[in-house]
Length: 155
Ligand SMILES: [Zn+2]
Image 1 (tube, rainbow, N blue to C red):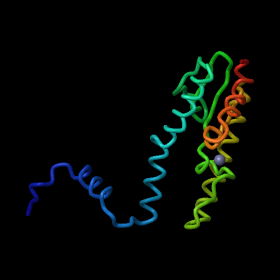
Image 2: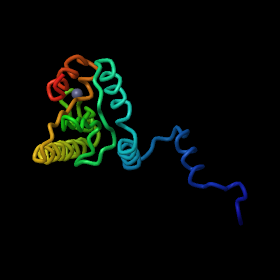
Image 3: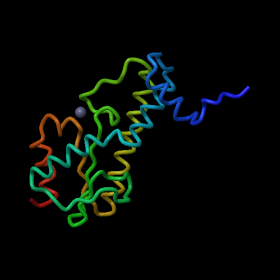
């Protein structure tokens, strides 16, 4: 027996899944969150920083520069690498770990923070000044965040 309506099974099943009110299994949900984080989860935070930098008259950045840890913004002239760390994923104190699967999340945050540290050290060894901004800084204290950039950028 063949189902003639099935033309693009993958896309179709995704659409159905997105619309479905059925609660997904934790593992599937977790995978989906992690995948979205890899692709574009940080995009809005990056755009926020972009807007702030423009407003502050900061220019000269490059995006997508291939360096350890893939910095969000790089200022080649001053050898400055800027990361915007999402508060949730990088285990900021301003966010609490989810109650469900708590040990999984705490381990995940620890791993991410350890990787951040390693990346920072690696870049510093190569002569880069690394600025790590928290997502919450861009929201709560944008002026302070810009001041943290202005030193390394000699503004
Ligand atoms: Zn935070």
